[in-house]
Amino acid sequence: MSLALPAPFQTRMQTQLGAAYPAFADALAQPSPTSIRVNRAKMALPTHLPKVPWTETGFYLSARPSFTLDPMFHGGGYYVQEASSMFLEQALRQSVDLSEPLAVLDLCGAPGGKSTHIASLLSPESLLVANEVIKPRANILAENIQKWGSGNVVVTNNDPSHIGQLTGFFDVLVVDAPCSGEGMFRKDPDAMNEWSEANVKLCSERQRRILMDVWDALKPGGVLIYSTCTYNLEENEENLAWLAQQQDAETIGLELSPDWGVTPTELEGMHGYRFYPHQTQGEGFFLAAVRKTDGEEARTFKKSKRPFLVLASKQEKSLVQDWLNEPQNWELVKHKEVLRALPKAWMLELEQLYENLRVVYGGIELAEVMKNNAKPLPALALSQHLSADAFPRAEVDFPTALKFLHREDIDLENSANGWVLVQFNGVPLGWGKKLQNRVNNHYPKEWRIRMSLDEALKPENVAGLFTLGKSAK
Image (cartoon, rainbow, N blue to C red; front, top):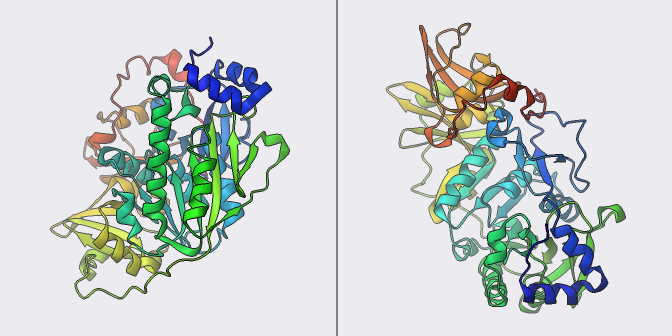
C-alpha cells in the first residue's frame, strides 16, 4: 500500500534524492520496523533477536506485540524505541568520555526514549537532567524514568530559555528538536496530514530559537547533539550552518560503518548524518554533533543559606538506611512527607536546579514517612539501586503479574506479612502489602493497565504472548 504523500513533499524529496527517490517511496509503503532497547541493569540481552547495528542494546522484533501485556515492559526491562534514533549512542560514545562524571541535558525528553538511553550510557557518577516543556508529557517522562530506575536523573518541566540561564552548567546538550515529522509519515499518518511547506519553515525558525535559548547552558568545550525526525535541509543542515555563523561552534565528525547504510552530509563545513528508510532499517532521522569552542564558564556554586533541599533527620534516615545499595553515594532529603535519595556528589548543582527550575521528579523517591513509619514508594521498587536484601520478594506467574499491574487483588500465599516486592521473571514490578489473608495492591493508580484482561488471560493467548527473557539479576 503506497502512501499518498503531499505533492510538494514529493517534489522536494525527488530533488534531494534524485535517482534514489523511487526506492525511498517504495520503502515508505512497507510496514514500520519494530525495535526495542534493553535495560541491561534489569535484563540479560536476548540472543535470538536481530541487533540494531549502531547500539549495543537495541533489537528488532519480527512483529509488534501488545507491549501493554508484557510485565517486563512495565518493570522497565526494556523500552520500545525507534531504531534510527538509537544512533544517539554513537554520537555520545564518539564525542565525549562516558567514563567521566558528566552533567547532561536532554532538552526535549518526553516520552523518554533518548533520556533512558542516555541514562544507560552515562557513568553512575554523572547527572542527567531530562526536560519536557509540556506538563502532561513531563509526567509521562517522569514515569518512564522511574521505571528505568537509574537514580541519577532529574525530570524538569521548563522552557529552553529558563534552562539557558544556567550558564555553563552542562557538558552535553541533547536537543531532539520538535520538527515537521517527515521521517514519521509511514508510522504516523497525522504527521503527513499536518505537513506543509509553511510548517517546515515554522519548525526551522522554532528550532533556531530553541538552540539560541539553551546555548549558554553548555560549557565551553561541551558538546551539542542535535537531531530531528525529518528529511529537509531547512530543519537540519541549514540550521547547523546557521548555528556555526551565530556562535563559536565546530563540527564533530562521526565514524560510520559502511554496512549501517547511514548517509553522511555536509553543508558549509558542518557534518550531519541522515537515515533514509530505503537504506536503513528504521524511520527518517537526522543527527549532528558540534563542539562549543568558546563562551562563559559556569559560576562556582556556593551552599545556600536557606537550602531548598532539606536534609532528612537522623531518625528519618534510620527508617530507610538498609534500603539502598551503596548508601554512602546518596543524600537523603525530605520534602513534605516524602524521603528522596539524591546523588551526594551533585548536591550543590541540584540545589541550583531545584531553586531555578520546575522539578517534576528527581533521584529516587524512597518512602512516605508518617508517624515514624516508612511506606516504600513505587520508584524504589523499580530502582536499580534497591538493596537485594531490603524486602522479601514474591516471584509471580504471568496471569498474577498482569492482575497486579491491572491493580486487582492478588494472592501471595507463601509470603510473610508486611511489604513484599512483587516481581516477574526476576524483574520487580511494585509493592504489595500482605495482611493476614489478603494483599493490598500498591501499584500506582495512574500507571495501571486499563485494558480488559479477560481476552489476554485466555490460556491460548497467554502461551503466545511476548516476553523477552530473564532478568539480569
